[in-house]
Amino acid sequence: MKKTVTTLADGRELIYYDSADDAVRDAVDERPLDPPASASELRRDPLLGDTVAIASHRQARTYHPPADECPLCPSRDGRHSEIPAPDYEVAVFENRFPSLAGPTGRCEVVCFTADHDASFAALTEERAALVLDAWTDRTAELAGLPEVRQVYCFENRGAEIGVTLGHPHGQIYAFPFTTPRTALMQRRAAAHRAATGRNLFDDVLARERAGERVVLAGEHWTAFVPYAAHWPYEVHLFPHRRVPDLRALDDAARTEFPQVYLELLRRFDRIFGPDEPPTPYIAAWHQAPFDDAAREEFGLHLELFTVRRTSGKLKYLAGTESGMSVFINDVPPEAAARRLREVASK
Image 1 (cartoon, rainbow, N blue to C red):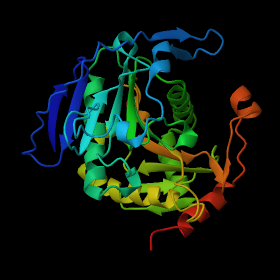
Image 2: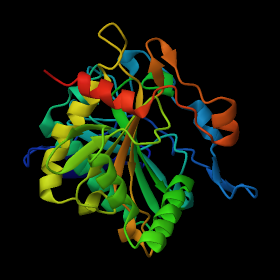
Image 3: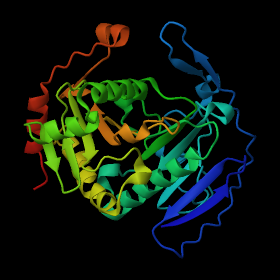
């Protein structure tokens, strides 16, 4: 992998990741950009203890542009985008409209391919491996920032999720605090260790690997629908060797990941049949916070889920979910796992 670091016209960082060591990335951003407006503010909820980012400047972000005005496509034919090069493999840049910036953290955009009409599922194994390298490198770089406590790599896919740019891309949030969901997992892991003397993530993986909810398994990764899945179709992908974050994956796990993950995404697109639009989903990496004394107890894993519950119908977070954080799942996890096994690649 070759990494080339440069800057955009307004001073934001742009990083190219290439599979070839001789790749040249010297295109200059010629746009007349003003410095980004990123006056984010963090406020703490006194009742819940949650932190909320107030980022009013995001109201002005690009919203469903036509394909020929996509800011994530390469710069070609006299049109300048966020990526000055006329082509690229994987590119990462600081978000122009960040939820977090400066002392409140950092937000980055990860472009998986220059092809506007592609998807992550359509990537080659070599390109998916390069994306994994980019996620890992960004985790390592952002971990070195003094204000960052946790790095979250994720992909929102589909208008039903709220995606405003159709180009295949994901995001990375570097938080200056431990997120509530991660903190809850930490508390559960500590309680499990105190009660059993064992690691919670290890025990979950062992139980699921022995059960009926496994979707697919390799030598180094297992994908399963969890026992108490919140979403209609939800899969957790665990490495067999527990590690706290992406940086600690060994070469064998890194090599196998693209095979397993691409097959999983392709199955997601076949859940509801050939006449249904591509399945909307969120893919979320869960990594240990950097300042946790017990971070080795945390288990890196990816959670993949869709808001589509059946053909033409979405799962909405209504009264119980939004008001009380109590999920009601219309699809039994065992049935979801069975369906995901049925739609395996031929």
